[in-house]
Length: 97
Image 1 (cartoon, rainbow, N blue to C red):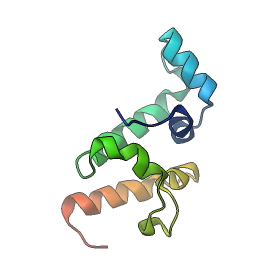
Image 2: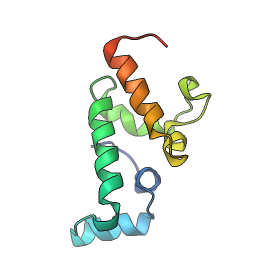
Image 3: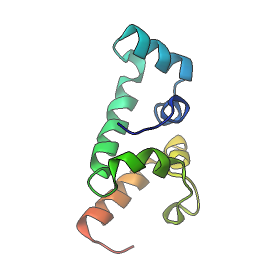
Image 4: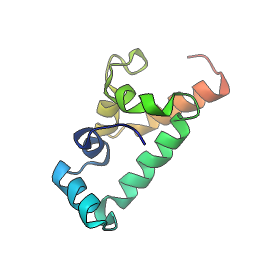
């Protein structure tokens, strides 16, 4: 859905590429990554309302002035996913800032 490499997705949900490949190949439940996966999926679904879904993979990896030049993926890795939710709220509601 995101056209995102496993490495990038692994960074979003804090697991290795190998873990993702194992889950995909064995079609297992996500288990220990379930919570992070659900949170990232909800964020991506929401962002898809304001960003072209096929562009999200690249959007996560591109520096963004709204985050002081940090990439959205780096913001998530620092445990600040709330900043992305705030951005989504502002974009969706038309609130400047």
